[in-house]
Length: 177
Length: 177
Image 1 (cartoon, rainbow over the protein chains, first blue to last red):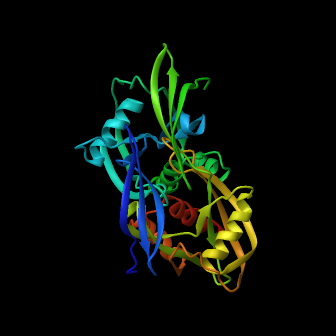
Image 2 (tube, chains in turn blue, orange):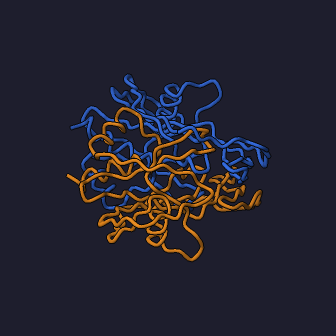
Image 3 (cartoon, rainbow over the protein chains, first blue to last red):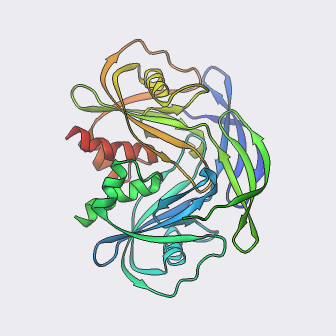
């Protein structure tokens, strides 16, 4: 598709710790114009950690944006100068205390391309090794372990409500079987 | 988990057409404080439309936030006073020209709960009926039809990069088989 939205004007509204907000005025065919509200995000990783005996390690944490705790795969924001794989190794360890000797990239996707450029790089972590955890002061996280078949049922029953976690579970099912 | 993040202060930064931005100051255990950047979104629907002969209807459109066209399931923002199912029927028709006589809710999920409350309600649309489309002036959309097994392979090869679309494809696979 040759069509593109040319930026005629770009207004920066906010520059934050995790997101920035800008409003672009774009040109559409026929010399029409529209506004696009865009949330800039540095990108993130999600990790599906699988133990020797085939359990998936998930984390439960309070999410202020939705005002409740959610069960998710370990995940985190990519820091400056970090490769996604380094982020994945760091976040897995920070959140669970596990180091992975085999961190494999699976796929990448935009979480909400209608208004944000946030991209999540998804990894499968195996050959896990428990080390002393160094929890992040700013996050209170509980670890839970599940069989993959129970997680797939939880997805089908609507009990997993985070997009990257649903994707991670549905794709991991194929690796574990 | 009993833990919650109590809001000590809430600052509204921006109120837009699709998103709002606010910064909450939250209290953590031990009388510590942190900031949470939160993108408010009214919620959206995604629809997996399946034709009589088992094809999935997808749409390709330019996404300004990521500066490229993406292949996605039909989707759209929930308008004021609209039930998700009404949104699903409306958006499917607006984007593809198909009316569904059987619009079934599957699951719902947050696209990016680390910074946004956007929730997507996912539907499966069958018993489709082609009507005269009324394209939205503000969107330029191309329709494409695929076999579900080709789409699953495209997901595995990393060729589908939108979270709701990946979830829709992986869940639809179970319905079609």
